[in-house]
Length: 384
Image 1 (cartoon, rainbow, N blue to C red):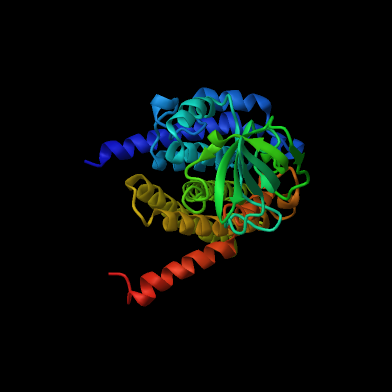
Image 2: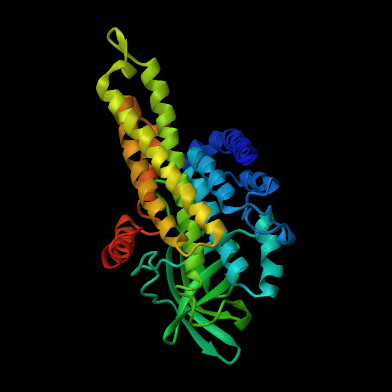
C-alpha cells in the first residue's frame, strides 16, 4: 500500500533536485558575490509555482502538503540558502494570510503572492528583540481613520525588494499584525550588506515614521497576534529552515565524498584515512537524522497535530546544528582549498552558521525544548 506514495515522493524529490541544480545552483555563487538574487530567478520560480506552493489552487497555489514543501525546500537549500531564505519569509506571510486572514485579504493577496507578482517580507525582529516575538516596541496607535505605525524592524529577509510586509506592532496591551505595502508613506528601508552568510537574501532594516495604516490591514484579531498569528508563520519558517539545513548538510556530504575520493595524499585517497571516514560518518548519519526529524515535523503539521510546533522547533534545532558541524568538517576535509571562495564548502560554512540564528536562535529553541521536556518527561513521569 505504501509503494505508490513512496514512488511519488521519490519522483518529486528528483524533480525538485534537477530544477534546483539547473536554475538555482548555477546562480548561487553569483548571489553570494553580488549580495542579491538574480532578478530573473523570480520569474522562473513563479513559473514553477514555487512561491507559497501550499496555498490551495483556488487561490493560485499548487496545493502542496507540507511534507512535499519540506522536500522542495531541502533541495533549494542544498543549492542556495539565500534563495530559500527569501522564499521562507515570503511563504511565512502567505501562510499567515491563508490561516488567519479574512476572505477579502485571501482574495486580494494570495493570487499575487503565489504568482510572484508581489514579494512579501516578515517583519517581527526588532533592535531590542529577536524572533521570539517579545518584546515588541514598534507601536500601532489607533486613530479614527486607522492606525499610525511607528518603530523599527531589523534583519527582514527580502526586505530590499519586498512589495508588502507583515508587521507586528504593539497596540495597547497586545500585539497586532498588519499588512503594510512598501509604498506606504513614512516607510523607509535600509539595505544590509556584508553579511556572514545568506548574502543574497537581500535583507533590510525597516523604519516606520507615523505610517498611516487602514484598519483593513489587520490580519487576525487586533491585539492578539502573538502568539496566535505569529505562531503559524514561525512554525512554517522553522520547518523550512530545518529542511534547508538538511540540504546544506547534504551538499557538504556530497562535496566531501567527491573530494575525498579524488584527492590523494601519498599513495592513498583521502577517503581511505580513518579520520576522514569518521567525519564522513558524522555527516551522513547526522544528515539522515535531521531529515527524519524534519519529515516527522511536516507529517505532524499536515495532520494538524498539536505537537507539530514543537516538532518543527526540534527539527530546526537539530538540522541547524548538524549543518554547522557538517560544513566545518567539509572545510577541514578540503584543507586549504576549503578556505577559498572557489570551493562551495566555504559558502556552505558561512550559510550554515546563519541557520543557527534565524527563526529562533539555538538558545531560544533550547528554552522551548527544555520546557517541553520538563512537562512531557518530568511532571508527566515520562512518555508512554
